[in-house]
Amino acid sequence: MLGFVPSDLVCDILSQAIACGASDVVLKTGSPARLRVNGEWLEAATPAVEPADIASLAGVCAIPGESADADASFAWPGGGRFRVNFHQSLGRPGAVLRRIRPEIPALESLGLPVQVILNWMEARSGLVILSGPTGSGKSTTAAAILEHINQTLPRHIVTIEDPVEYLFRDARAVFTQREVGIDTPSFAEGLRRSLRQAPDVIFLGEIRDSESAATALQASETGHLVLTTLHSASAPEALERLELFFSEGERECMRQALASQLRGILCQRLLPATSSGRVAACEFFTNAASSRVLITGGRFPEIADFIDRNPSGASQALDEALASLVKSGTVAAEEALLHCLRPQNLERRLRGIASHPAATRR
Image 1 (cartoon, rainbow, N blue to C red):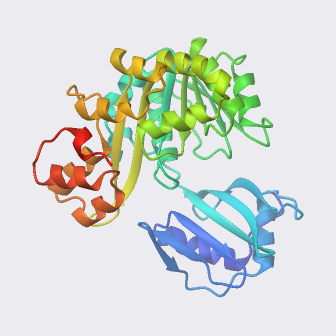
Image 2 (cartoon, rainbow, N blue to C red; image 1 turned 90 degrees about the horizontal axis):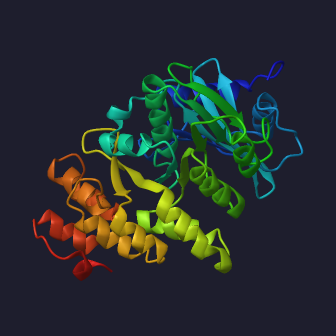
Image 3 (cartoon, rainbow, N blue to C red; image 1 turned 90 degrees about the vertical axis):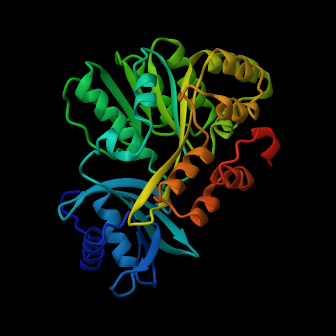
């Protein structure tokens, strides 16, 4: 914000974060900053953070001093954009920053099932869900998908984000990027209003409540392609979480709409690579005629068996992805076992034993 600059200490911390390739920064009053580098937390070589340092950053983000909890983003001349969460801990101010890299990576560079994703995104309408724990790269994957569309297809893409992260330059597509709290009061309201903005593709930063969940499904039913994110560990869990946004009386209609409109779910997580950096492991599920029956009936746990048995390459279990990474030497077996959903199943895959999934499911 014009007239405000971060304190010298905050500038030093951000410089260190960029120099060492940190993905996250924790500013805690009374302690030196912590930087997350390749998934590990390191202490910055700076003095302890003071309340005035947090206040200087809040000023840059135009956050009122009385706000204890707030989300924002800001552009820093020394190294691109940051997403910021301001909060209080034991009555003292703090902030957590996530670095938004200025360049949008190519979809092919992320280690994802590119052709499967592109098949989903070629649809003129429907719902595509990106899932995974916090810090698993969902925002980067979404940006890479949208940029691929931008470079290849004439589309109007409307994004509703909290806050806006990656900034897009119009190419073949034209973007309307809207930030919750600045351009629209909420995800649900922004999504509703976007239906009047002639969109072809809508990116909803996150489904957070029943209103945004219902509107996302409605948008997919009325001829729009909706890309969104959820926090879940697997494709079946993503479906279960989505259903929980609806009341008991609404769930039958919700499942029917979901069965018809869901194109696919990508669940990803980032693991330390044996060489350096991190690598993505993905579970992906392409909705098909046989799986629509499972979704309509609310038989979400059976989706895991559907994925395991699917021979077409349109779906893949997380354990299969982890086994491939271990066999190629990309990820250590011990690390893969920490992230897998069914350790016995992964161990069997690593030994080359093909067994029925139901026999190993916990």
